[in-house]
Amino acid sequence: MKKNIIGIAANQLYQNNQAFFDQQITYTPQGFIDGVHQAGGIPVVLPISDPESASDYVAAIDKLLLAGGQDVTPFLYEEEPHPKLGPTSIERDSFEMALIKEAIRQNKPIFTVCRGTQLLNVTLGGTLYQDLSQYPKWEVKHDMFPTVPNFGLHSITVKANSTLASLFGEQAKVNSYHHQAIKDLAESLVPIAWAPDGIIEAVESREKNTKILGVQWHPELTHKKDPMEQSLFDYFVQEFE
Image (cartoon, rainbow, N blue to C red; front, side, top):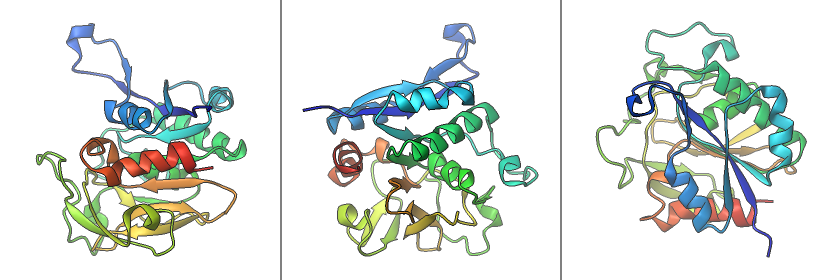
């Protein structure tokens, strides 16, 4: 039985790595590697590269996974940086945007996590709250730091009959590590889960032939202890076609 090759778009460590003489380090969190392995897939890390090479990278994989990390560069949705904007990487943004477009063009499934879901929305024409202080109905804690991610921080309501509902049911609790969030949703996406304060927590494609699933939380941090979170990896690797 063929194992699906899952391309995981990598991040770079730019600083505080004296043990490596401050060289840039390409990495992805181990939870993504383990989650894909446990689901029966073959994880392959895709280093930040020239966007023109995205077609070659996508051609070499079966499915694309985008992880969390830096804030999304606001110029990409025509905004000036907010005072509470965190670190950004236009190189990573540009490469991952190219990967998303190529995966859609090559008809390959996409799974996105946290920042990956935010960048997906921007790539497809949506916008973000650069900081949740811009959201007028903000009343739920969305950044559980310094609490360890061993349990759900807040609840979500899941749209009935959605891809996510088949895995999580219509109510669940999830961890949460973000201060940015979807503002204007891209027209080609559909919201399928919400936090109690209305923040969009998951999306899927409006187009039946485009396979996209994006979540705002971090299943890679809890999948070993929570079978429901591992089910996201299982579904993406084994069934999402």
